[in-house]
Image (cartoon, rainbow, N blue to C red; front, side, top):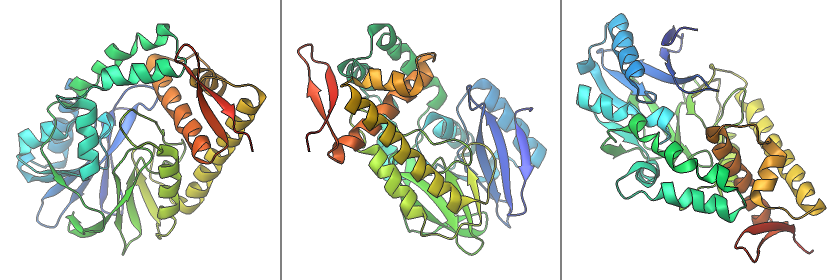
Length: 330
């Protein structure tokens, strides 16, 4: 596949695949063009020199000058979605819109006052991750800053307040879990949803426990899936992989997937108390790079937190300051 790849859909949506790191390889950006020629860009992708050149090529091929970009709308704050929004804002002079909570999370991760590069290694040490892994985290986290700079000046995107994009009115729907303040955008008349990473057609969106962020991310994620079940969606345009029409079945499959993982994790804890890192290794193995290990550890802790919330396990501090999980006495 050559990146960027442009696909026109009959829903009037243009999908643009922008390059990102392995294993996902690309993130979906979407263009919505209105009757007067104005364009909204959804999730422009991570900032790299290659992606800047790719956007110049895409807009040139489509005959869209930067001055016609009316706005950039972000489903959430992760680098592969947020990244080039500040660059677009500088080039096109356009507003960038994201939820208030997403803007808060953006500053928590990459703002001048961010302490995440210290806070996340500390969290992982408290849950038993060896220094061979935690020592890799600061440089790994630092590597994302060039992908998101400059941070945009964002206007709020508010749940339920209609948003004009591509000559149509879209309804923002806020769900958490994958990212606090994540917004999907529904065109109710056609049943088309731009769902970001709230629902993906082939893989399970990562659900991470992060310091200072949502304290119960898996609970939030599953509630978000149930919330989305209330909407009639004929076709979903996700942040990764290709558009799909089995939206309702996918919601059910994701809910079942996480319930099964909770059962598996509880069984492991009932068999023998364990640290978060030991549970992570049992679920995901350790033949991972630091990027995937970070996701795996944060997802494991999101699941142990949900088991705690349900009263099925308890977190017990050890003499060395490392927490272990034990089955709760019933």
